[in-house]
Length: 216
Length: 222
Image 1 (cartoon, each protein chain N blue to C red):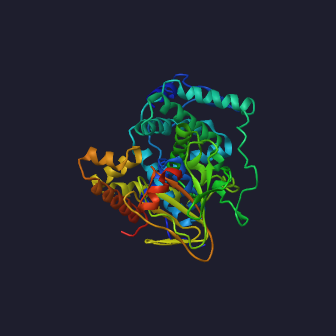
Image 2 (cartoon, one colour; image 1 turned 30 degrees about the horizontal axis):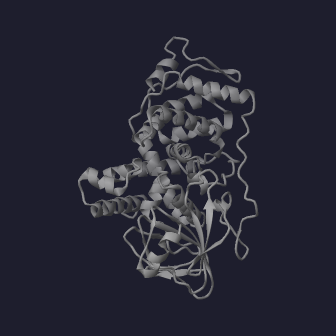
Image 3 (cartoon, one colour; image 1 turned 135 degrees about the vertical axis):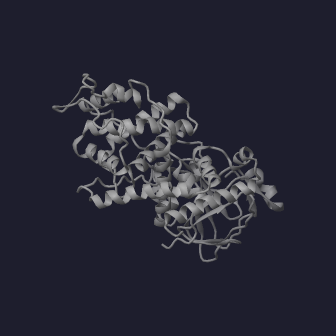
């Protein structure tokens, strides 16, 4: 990410000059400021509506290094992780018009793209995408700012819910999310009986669901 | 269609994480196609993926990665992208016995011929378009027939498409998903009012128990 920033920052230097249909992408405007969920969603909508490369640069800067990290943590070798992250970002550009901010936040949508590409890569089959095989209709009207807020709020709620889990619950959840490990391996790793791990996974997921559904 | 038996949290989380094997994932996808409640739950677990993505410590990309991405976009804007691979079309319009349409997620799959495997059961192997190694089976069981009592080495995922069956854990109707854990042994019985067609996949293998079970074990490959 820093490399990209250094590359693209325009502190008086020519930096990155890219012709974009009569305009120039010369720099990344907001430097290091971390964009919030709403802004990230707007960037995707801008790509959909205007093929805006500045918006793409901002998204890339934020997400490409995270997707790479995520895929590496999921067990892919470094170069494969970066290749799939690259492919993920290109898909974000190509499929931007399918992004529906009322259904998922920006991070969630990009996560599902990376997930599907990872599955494709590992098994060359689009099983994970099968349930969504009928692509949603393209957005006709610009989504309301309300809808935008809704999905972004859901992402914030999920982050809060993850924090509300006990350390152990969060660990068990992350292990099952990132690792291809059977529960027996998790059990070995944590030095716990298998039954205990299984009931903890169940508890953690149940609690997470309760938090997300606002029942707790 | 009121769905009464849903996927477990654990299964939906693994599905959302892209970590269910291809066969079980297809059974779950078939369930999701008919179950808005589970689709909403998957959506929440996908949001967990989004949250984990946001909180992760970023790993820098290669210095020229962004420029390389822009070059790809430039090339695509100059000329149309290579046409995507043709999708595999089913040879026949996909229907189940009785003229019932195949559920949407199965339509790209190749449905094998029905074979008799005993116990009043016919089975048809389902091939996934890009993963011929995935084990996925359509089962067609006559009314009132009892399946051999069996356990599993891994979880068994069964989605009811037509008819109904019962086991010690409940009655399963179209749209219902049965998830049977490794430790559990059960003996499904098809309800007497008609045949039952299910889509089934196993993580791991099946362990047939009882005298007949052990007898036919070597011949039953599901």
